[in-house]
Length: 354
Image (cartoon, rainbow, N blue to C red; front, top):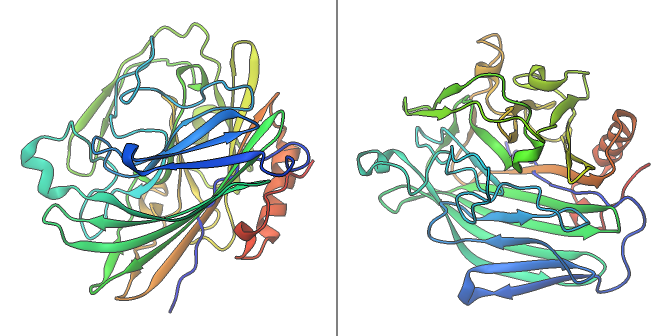
Protein backbone atom coordinates (compact mmCIF):
# COMPACT_ATOMS: atom_id res chain seq x y z
CA UNK A 1 0.00 0.00 0.00
CA UNK A 2 1.24 3.48 -0.83
CA UNK A 3 0.30 6.12 1.72
CA UNK A 4 -0.17 9.70 0.56
CA UNK A 5 -0.28 12.39 3.26
CA UNK A 6 0.55 16.05 2.98
CA UNK A 7 2.10 18.53 5.44
CA UNK A 8 1.16 21.86 3.90
CA UNK A 9 1.56 25.11 5.76
CA UNK A 10 -0.35 28.07 4.44
CA UNK A 11 -0.32 31.47 5.99
CA UNK A 12 -3.28 32.60 3.94
CA UNK A 13 -3.67 35.81 1.98
CA UNK A 14 -6.72 37.79 3.05
CA UNK A 15 -7.38 39.11 -0.46
CA UNK A 16 -6.06 38.47 -3.95
CA UNK A 17 -2.66 36.96 -4.66
CA UNK A 18 -0.10 39.78 -5.06
CA UNK A 19 1.02 41.08 -8.45
CA UNK A 20 3.63 39.28 -10.53
CA UNK A 21 7.05 38.83 -8.92
CA UNK A 22 5.74 40.06 -5.53
CA UNK A 23 7.32 37.01 -3.85
CA UNK A 24 11.08 36.75 -4.22
CA UNK A 25 12.96 33.53 -3.38
CA UNK A 26 16.72 34.11 -3.05
CA UNK A 27 19.02 31.09 -2.69
CA UNK A 28 22.33 31.53 -0.84
CA UNK A 29 23.96 28.10 -0.67
CA UNK A 30 27.15 29.47 0.90
CA UNK A 31 25.18 30.91 3.82
CA UNK A 32 22.99 27.76 4.04
CA UNK A 33 19.76 29.70 3.58
CA UNK A 34 17.01 30.72 1.19
CA UNK A 35 15.38 34.09 1.93
CA UNK A 36 11.75 34.79 1.04
CA UNK A 37 10.45 38.34 0.75
CA UNK A 38 7.00 39.63 -0.21
CA UNK A 39 6.74 43.08 -1.79
CA UNK A 40 10.29 43.66 -0.60
CA UNK A 41 9.52 42.82 3.04
CA UNK A 42 11.25 39.91 4.81
CA UNK A 43 8.87 37.02 5.40
CA UNK A 44 10.86 33.91 6.31
CA UNK A 45 13.98 31.92 5.46
CA UNK A 46 14.63 28.26 4.84
CA UNK A 47 17.84 27.53 6.80
CA UNK A 48 19.96 24.47 7.54
CA UNK A 49 22.77 25.51 9.93
CA UNK A 50 24.92 22.86 11.59
CA UNK A 51 23.63 24.01 14.99
CA UNK A 52 20.03 23.03 14.19
CA UNK A 53 19.41 19.32 13.63
CA UNK A 54 16.86 19.74 10.84
CA UNK A 55 16.01 22.28 8.15
CA UNK A 56 13.56 24.90 9.42
CA UNK A 57 11.70 28.01 8.34
CA UNK A 58 13.09 30.73 10.62
CA UNK A 59 12.16 33.38 11.52
CA UNK A 60 8.58 33.92 10.40
CA UNK A 61 6.96 37.37 10.25
CA UNK A 62 3.42 38.59 9.74
CA UNK A 63 2.47 41.02 6.98
CA UNK A 64 3.56 44.01 9.12
CA UNK A 65 6.99 42.49 9.64
CA UNK A 66 6.36 41.48 13.26
CA UNK A 67 8.22 38.36 14.37
CA UNK A 68 5.74 35.62 15.31
CA UNK A 69 8.34 32.90 16.07
CA UNK A 70 10.63 32.71 19.10
CA UNK A 71 14.18 33.93 18.57
CA UNK A 72 16.08 31.69 21.02
CA UNK A 73 18.37 29.81 20.56
CA UNK A 74 19.36 31.15 17.11
CA UNK A 75 18.80 34.87 17.75
CA UNK A 76 17.67 35.44 21.37
CA UNK A 77 15.37 38.33 22.25
CA UNK A 78 14.82 39.87 25.72
CA UNK A 79 12.23 38.18 27.92
CA UNK A 80 12.03 34.91 25.96
CA UNK A 81 11.94 31.46 27.47
CA UNK A 82 15.10 29.39 27.07
CA UNK A 83 13.60 25.90 27.28
CA UNK A 84 13.51 23.21 24.56
CA UNK A 85 16.48 24.27 22.38
CA UNK A 86 15.18 22.02 19.58
CA UNK A 87 12.13 24.29 19.09
CA UNK A 88 13.32 26.52 16.23
CA UNK A 89 10.94 28.29 13.87
CA UNK A 90 8.72 25.90 11.92
CA UNK A 91 9.76 22.29 11.32
CA UNK A 92 8.60 18.73 10.67
CA UNK A 93 9.97 15.64 12.42
CA UNK A 94 9.03 12.96 14.96
CA UNK A 95 10.01 11.58 18.35
CA UNK A 96 10.05 7.84 17.65
CA UNK A 97 11.22 6.62 14.23
CA UNK A 98 12.44 3.02 14.59
CA UNK A 99 13.05 3.96 18.22
CA UNK A 100 15.22 6.95 17.28
CA UNK A 101 14.29 10.46 18.49
CA UNK A 102 14.40 13.06 15.70
CA UNK A 103 12.27 15.64 17.57
CA UNK A 104 14.41 16.36 20.65
CA UNK A 105 17.85 16.47 19.02
CA UNK A 106 19.96 19.62 19.52
CA UNK A 107 23.46 20.72 20.47
CA UNK A 108 22.30 20.54 24.11
CA UNK A 109 22.05 16.73 24.01
CA UNK A 110 24.63 14.96 26.17
CA UNK A 111 27.21 12.95 24.17
CA UNK A 112 25.99 9.75 25.81
CA UNK A 113 22.52 10.35 24.35
CA UNK A 114 23.69 11.08 20.80
CA UNK A 115 23.28 7.49 19.48
CA UNK A 116 19.57 7.68 20.39
CA UNK A 117 19.02 10.83 18.32
CA UNK A 118 18.35 11.36 14.63
CA UNK A 119 19.23 14.30 12.37
CA UNK A 120 17.50 15.55 9.22
CA UNK A 121 20.29 16.54 6.84
CA UNK A 122 19.59 19.00 4.02
CA UNK A 123 20.91 17.60 0.74
CA UNK A 124 20.00 20.01 -2.04
CA UNK A 125 17.79 22.75 -3.42
CA UNK A 126 15.90 21.13 -6.28
CA UNK A 127 14.31 24.33 -7.56
CA UNK A 128 13.47 27.89 -6.51
CA UNK A 129 11.09 30.24 -8.26
CA UNK A 130 9.90 33.82 -7.67
CA UNK A 131 6.62 35.25 -8.95
CA UNK A 132 3.02 35.84 -7.79
CA UNK A 133 3.88 33.11 -5.31
CA UNK A 134 7.26 31.81 -4.31
CA UNK A 135 8.15 28.15 -4.78
CA UNK A 136 10.95 26.13 -3.22
CA UNK A 137 11.64 22.39 -3.50
CA UNK A 138 14.24 20.72 -1.28
CA UNK A 139 15.56 17.25 -0.52
CA UNK A 140 16.84 15.94 2.82
CA UNK A 141 17.72 12.65 4.53
CA UNK A 142 16.58 11.39 7.94
CA UNK A 143 19.83 9.98 9.30
CA UNK A 144 20.92 7.94 12.32
CA UNK A 145 23.92 8.82 14.48
CA UNK A 146 26.05 6.26 12.60
CA UNK A 147 25.31 7.87 9.21
CA UNK A 148 22.68 5.37 8.00
CA UNK A 149 19.67 6.94 6.24
CA UNK A 150 16.18 5.75 7.24
CA UNK A 151 14.05 8.09 5.12
CA UNK A 152 14.47 10.33 2.12
CA UNK A 153 12.48 13.57 2.24
CA UNK A 154 11.31 15.76 -0.63
CA UNK A 155 9.51 18.96 0.40
CA UNK A 156 7.78 21.57 -1.72
CA UNK A 157 7.04 24.98 -0.20
CA UNK A 158 4.77 27.66 -1.64
CA UNK A 159 4.80 31.22 -0.24
CA UNK A 160 2.26 34.00 -0.78
CA UNK A 161 0.68 36.96 1.00
CA UNK A 162 -0.95 40.37 0.85
CA UNK A 163 -1.28 43.48 3.02
CA UNK A 164 -2.70 41.66 6.06
CA UNK A 165 -1.69 38.02 5.83
CA UNK A 166 0.94 35.49 4.81
CA UNK A 167 0.77 32.01 3.26
CA UNK A 168 3.10 29.00 3.36
CA UNK A 169 2.21 25.62 1.87
CA UNK A 170 4.42 22.69 2.74
CA UNK A 171 4.09 19.28 1.09
CA UNK A 172 6.53 16.68 2.39
CA UNK A 173 6.97 13.18 0.96
CA UNK A 174 8.92 10.67 3.07
CA UNK A 175 10.21 7.49 1.43
CA UNK A 176 11.58 4.49 3.32
CA UNK A 177 14.81 3.09 1.92
CA UNK A 178 15.88 -0.53 2.45
CA UNK A 179 14.11 -1.33 5.72
CA UNK A 180 10.71 -1.02 7.37
CA UNK A 181 10.30 2.30 9.17
CA UNK A 182 7.92 2.60 12.12
CA UNK A 183 6.50 5.74 13.69
CA UNK A 184 5.35 4.42 17.04
CA UNK A 185 2.69 6.51 18.76
CA UNK A 186 4.52 9.29 20.64
CA UNK A 187 3.74 12.73 22.03
CA UNK A 188 6.33 14.88 20.27
CA UNK A 189 5.50 15.38 16.59
CA UNK A 190 5.00 16.19 13.87
CA UNK A 191 4.51 19.63 12.37
CA UNK A 192 5.84 22.05 15.00
CA UNK A 193 6.11 25.80 15.48
CA UNK A 194 7.55 27.74 18.44
CA UNK A 195 5.88 31.12 18.73
CA UNK A 196 6.93 34.50 20.12
CA UNK A 197 6.58 35.07 23.86
CA UNK A 198 3.58 37.41 23.46
CA UNK A 199 1.58 34.64 21.76
CA UNK A 200 2.06 32.18 24.61
CA UNK A 201 -0.79 31.51 27.02
CA UNK A 202 -0.37 33.19 30.42
CA UNK A 203 1.60 30.75 32.59
CA UNK A 204 -0.07 29.69 35.83
CA UNK A 205 2.56 27.34 37.30
CA UNK A 206 6.00 25.91 36.53
CA UNK A 207 6.04 22.68 34.50
CA UNK A 208 8.44 19.78 33.93
CA UNK A 209 8.18 17.89 30.62
CA UNK A 210 9.79 14.49 29.96
CA UNK A 211 10.77 13.17 26.53
CA UNK A 212 10.78 9.56 25.28
CA UNK A 213 14.20 8.88 26.85
CA UNK A 214 13.28 10.28 30.25
CA UNK A 215 15.10 13.60 29.85
CA UNK A 216 13.31 16.36 31.76
CA UNK A 217 12.89 19.99 30.67
CA UNK A 218 11.79 22.57 33.21
CA UNK A 219 9.47 25.35 32.03
CA UNK A 220 9.21 28.01 34.75
CA UNK A 221 6.31 30.33 35.45
CA UNK A 222 7.14 33.80 34.11
CA UNK A 223 5.74 37.31 34.32
CA UNK A 224 2.52 37.37 32.28
CA UNK A 225 2.62 41.05 31.34
CA UNK A 226 1.69 41.36 27.66
CA UNK A 227 1.07 37.60 27.29
CA UNK A 228 -2.30 37.18 25.59
CA UNK A 229 -2.31 33.95 23.58
CA UNK A 230 -5.17 31.46 23.49
CA UNK A 231 -6.04 28.39 21.41
CA UNK A 232 -9.39 27.60 19.78
CA UNK A 233 -10.08 24.37 17.89
CA UNK A 234 -12.71 23.42 15.33
CA UNK A 235 -14.41 21.40 18.06
CA UNK A 236 -14.69 24.39 20.39
CA UNK A 237 -11.84 23.52 22.74
CA UNK A 238 -10.15 26.62 24.12
CA UNK A 239 -6.95 27.51 25.93
CA UNK A 240 -5.12 24.60 27.53
CA UNK A 241 -8.13 22.37 26.88
CA UNK A 242 -7.04 22.21 23.22
CA UNK A 243 -4.02 20.05 24.06
CA UNK A 244 -4.47 16.35 23.34
CA UNK A 245 -7.77 16.78 21.49
CA UNK A 246 -8.68 16.24 17.86
CA UNK A 247 -9.71 18.96 15.47
CA UNK A 248 -9.80 19.87 11.78
CA UNK A 249 -8.08 23.15 12.62
CA UNK A 250 -6.61 25.03 15.55
CA UNK A 251 -6.10 28.79 15.87
CA UNK A 252 -3.64 30.52 18.20
CA UNK A 253 -4.56 34.18 18.73
CA UNK A 254 -2.86 36.92 20.71
CA UNK A 255 -1.63 40.49 20.60
CA UNK A 256 1.79 41.87 19.71
CA UNK A 257 2.17 45.66 19.86
CA UNK A 258 -1.61 46.02 20.35
CA UNK A 259 -2.36 44.20 17.09
CA UNK A 260 -4.22 40.90 17.18
CA UNK A 261 -2.43 38.16 15.25
CA UNK A 262 -3.92 34.75 14.50
CA UNK A 263 -1.92 31.68 13.48
CA UNK A 264 -4.01 28.77 12.24
CA UNK A 265 -2.97 25.25 11.31
CA UNK A 266 -5.45 23.42 9.10
CA UNK A 267 -5.54 19.64 8.79
CA UNK A 268 -6.28 17.82 5.54
CA UNK A 269 -8.56 14.75 5.28
CA UNK A 270 -5.91 12.85 3.26
CA UNK A 271 -3.59 12.89 6.27
CA UNK A 272 -3.39 9.75 8.41
CA UNK A 273 -5.15 10.08 11.71
CA UNK A 274 -7.44 12.85 10.44
CA UNK A 275 -8.55 14.91 12.25
CA UNK A 276 -5.19 15.42 13.92
CA UNK A 277 -4.44 15.62 17.63
CA UNK A 278 -3.15 19.01 18.78
CA UNK A 279 0.12 19.11 20.69
CA UNK A 280 -0.62 22.73 21.62
CA UNK A 281 1.23 23.87 24.74
CA UNK A 282 0.72 27.06 26.75
CA UNK A 283 4.46 27.85 26.68
CA UNK A 284 4.44 28.46 22.91
CA UNK A 285 4.76 25.07 21.20
CA UNK A 286 2.04 24.84 18.53
CA UNK A 287 2.09 21.42 16.85
CA UNK A 288 -0.13 19.01 14.93
CA UNK A 289 0.56 15.34 15.66
CA UNK A 290 -1.64 12.82 13.83
CA UNK A 291 0.61 9.87 14.72
CA UNK A 292 0.64 10.01 18.54
CA UNK A 293 -2.84 8.65 19.07
CA UNK A 294 -2.09 6.26 21.94
CA UNK A 295 -0.59 9.03 24.05
CA UNK A 296 -3.33 11.59 23.46
CA UNK A 297 -6.20 9.13 23.91
CA UNK A 298 -4.79 7.59 27.10
CA UNK A 299 -4.50 4.23 25.34
CA UNK A 300 -8.01 4.14 23.91
CA UNK A 301 -6.68 4.47 20.34
CA UNK A 302 -3.47 3.53 18.58
CA UNK A 303 -2.07 3.98 15.09
CA UNK A 304 1.40 2.31 14.86
CA UNK A 305 2.06 3.99 11.53
CA UNK A 306 4.76 2.34 9.38
CA UNK A 307 6.29 2.29 5.92
CA UNK A 308 7.61 -0.85 4.24
CA UNK A 309 10.83 -0.57 2.20
CA UNK A 310 10.44 1.79 -0.79
CA UNK A 311 6.99 2.95 0.36
CA UNK A 312 6.22 6.68 0.60
CA UNK A 313 3.92 8.90 2.62
CA UNK A 314 3.11 12.56 1.93
CA UNK A 315 2.09 14.98 4.68
CA UNK A 316 0.14 18.13 4.00
CA UNK A 317 -0.93 20.99 6.28
CA UNK A 318 -1.91 24.59 5.83
CA UNK A 319 -1.11 27.46 8.20
CA UNK A 320 -2.55 30.95 8.07
CA UNK A 321 -1.07 34.04 9.75
CA UNK A 322 -3.63 36.83 9.72
CA UNK A 323 -3.37 40.32 11.20
CA UNK A 324 -6.59 41.38 12.90
CA UNK A 325 -7.59 37.89 14.01
CA UNK A 326 -9.43 34.94 12.55
CA UNK A 327 -12.99 34.00 13.49
CA UNK A 328 -13.96 30.34 13.93
CA UNK A 329 -16.37 30.76 11.04
CA UNK A 330 -13.63 31.90 8.68
CA UNK A 331 -11.25 29.20 9.95
CA UNK A 332 -13.93 26.63 9.18
CA UNK A 333 -14.39 27.97 5.65
CA UNK A 334 -10.62 27.99 5.10
CA UNK A 335 -10.31 24.36 6.21
CA UNK A 336 -13.23 23.21 4.07
CA UNK A 337 -11.73 24.89 1.01
CA UNK A 338 -8.36 23.34 1.79
CA UNK A 339 -9.94 19.91 2.24
CA UNK A 340 -11.47 20.11 -1.23
CA UNK A 341 -8.15 20.70 -2.91
CA UNK A 342 -6.59 17.82 -4.81
CA UNK A 343 -3.08 16.53 -4.20
CA UNK A 344 -1.86 18.90 -6.90
CA UNK A 345 -2.92 21.93 -4.84
CA UNK A 346 0.60 23.08 -4.18
CA UNK A 347 1.07 23.56 -7.92
CA UNK A 348 -1.52 26.32 -7.71
CA UNK A 349 -1.53 29.67 -5.92
CA UNK A 350 -2.94 29.45 -2.37
CA UNK A 351 -6.27 31.18 -1.98
CA UNK A 352 -8.08 32.55 1.04
CA UNK A 353 -11.77 32.05 1.72
CA UNK A 354 -13.74 34.71 3.56
